[in-house]
Length: 531
Image (cartoon, rainbow, N blue to C red):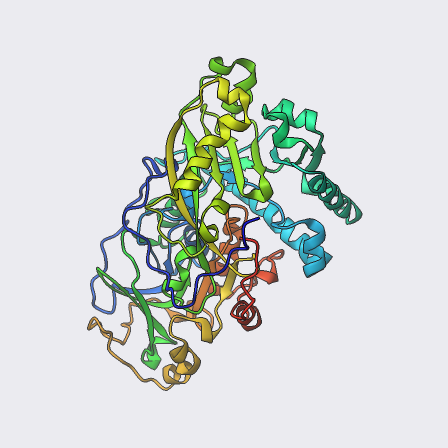
């Protein structure tokens, strides 16, 4: 057995995203580009209520929800690449809700109430995303391609290879049944014969059947993120129910190199943040870090480790090539997960199959690797061998690989994302955050490094639209490869915290970035999650 993955050493800072990532199939034709010129450096045009760093699933959703909650806020979204250039644009295209550990294990760790809260939060995310996509595509969707969010008719099939895995699956179903949640979970246990009949897999791949989730969907993730960000940035009534108020500004290819804080004059309100980019400076009253794998580049004490994963896509497989045996693959009727989630695949409905995972073959599971411009050759070879080796139907049909790419996930120590306002000690400027409120209240002012005026003019955003700050820096990151069924409503919770409204019911408090939780992750044995 491979040794357990370890976190990267503290002396290895996470870099900004590399400029030349391998092209993902999902990102073909997906780009938004900046929706506004970079603002003048006059202390007026470059002053925003909220700056969101990252235009992936989380960051775009934060901007979307903020515009719904506080239509008068001036919001900037900045990304080192373009829309969905990080993990969301480079994953396996699956929306698979559920607990990230066994039901019994999760109940033992957190209690029944918290375990069910996690489960229902995933299911609510799926429901809300379906609602968003139905409203968006039903109204025409503008010029944004259809995200193609579709439930697998045969479900998400987690194949069971050993007797112990089947015993554990049965125990999980029994635990859900005792809690009265089995039907809501959408889980079902199949025997080996049905698993093989549905998937076309060789007998050895699912010798003990499968645990099937009927809430599993396929989606083209960057199209979904593009639709969300277009709604946040639309300057004319958007398709479907229009979003109110001021559109957000999106600045593509604008990496934030540093976040620093300085007090504004008393008349301008509380702290201001200065975001330095190659194009100039953005000033903001609040900052949201939605940077996932690259969070530590700006938040060096945030315990989120980059982890590389690899994905391949086949050429379209004509249904006639494999006859009835491959029809379910070409129609995209199911997704498959195996080997504790380290292998996952699906038919896409266009004749393609997409397969990802196997990073257990890389040194240290590719933990600490933040470069998505390169591939691990051992992982690559195993991915290319997997489908024809385990699925004779695909082998007979002559499956061929079209594309391979990498994506960088962000992992926390306890397997949960960090969602909420950061304690002062974990912000981009810990010393300033711990002692800065009094400076702001005293009316002191400083000039920015770019020479912009420190005092906001009367026409600037009104700080009364935001609640009094704590640290003023928020995070939505560290989704541990499970962001698709969690990002949308995690982002809503962050937007609610920024806006100063009650957080919606059902948000898991386990996600909050508390001092206790962050401190535990920094303990010698803190980084212990299954990565």
